[in-house]
Length: 149
Length: 304
Image (cartoon, rainbow over all chains, first blue to last red; front, side):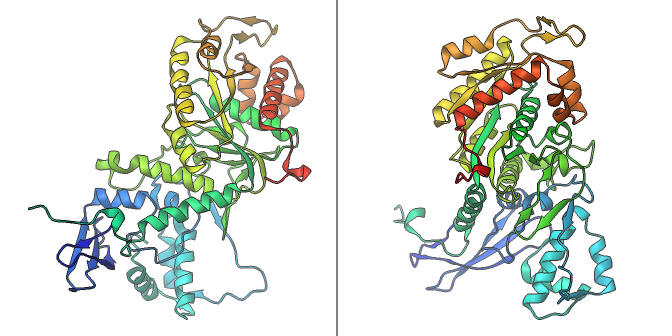
């Protein structure tokens, strides 16, 4: 997927991606020469097709996790199918979860919970956050462009 | 007047990063399979010929011969390998670098959608269901890629990939694992099976995929009481297919109620230990496959 500014004959550069939450996607590109911007808007079918490939327009904001596509895509997954790796004994956890955040995480189906928890934990570590609260989860969702997590 | 616009290949990636992400996905598959000596597909083209049972039984025979064996159930919509191999329904351990496969009592490493789905629920994907024809095939291909790349297969002598009916998944497997050692083609004696398997063999030929051999399943019925063989299907698909394609025969298996019961109960290892004519035939088939692949093993220090 590439965009060319016809007037400048310049390849347009990816600027940002937005997921409004209705299954659509907006990806903004800018011409480095004339600064003209354009937005690629995809309908839910097109968004899902790109998502099915396991790629993100504009690049990944979080590292790929094992079975990411299966866990985020399968709607009939078994509760308790995965057992996330525990923190090794003797190593103090660097990031804690508030009671409210744990409760909110509990609403995530267990089929994907381990993956979601890992994403939020790594976000907190990367941003020097010692406790994950619902507010941190909201911020991470926005910053990372996550949908449905 | 037509604009003089540069083509896609004249322009570098502007930051969408899609091409690089796809390349990185393939690199993950390649890295994971670098410790697997032989990736072998079990295909037919025809449904109901017993591919999964053959895969489960062969994997158990090979594991009993101290081969390091994995089974990937690529039949995402009709998974059955987990039950046949007696896989525990425990949670699969998730590690930073991948998912631990289930292990059978005989040591076969298994990954199947069967282990991930709610019992009695079909595989269905998240939205939007009204347009699933657009993306479902891509989603399934991605699931196959994740089964190959994200499972901690470890060093394996053989990774058997149980393919669903049809030929589409074989093509996907070959694209993801171009170093495919070959395929085992399973047929039953009927004309319908002959035609479907012929198409699968044709695809293999066109893609340059080696056919390790043709295995004829359900060649007659073996009485569970007296052990005598009786007819089951009309036709001789195996001989006709070998007349049309240069593929060797791996042998034949009858419908044996004892084998069927053992697979249904996840008791293939015990069934093999008990011996019998069908078990002996299965052992001979496994030997031909080993000979076709080469005999050295991971535990003997061979480099995958």
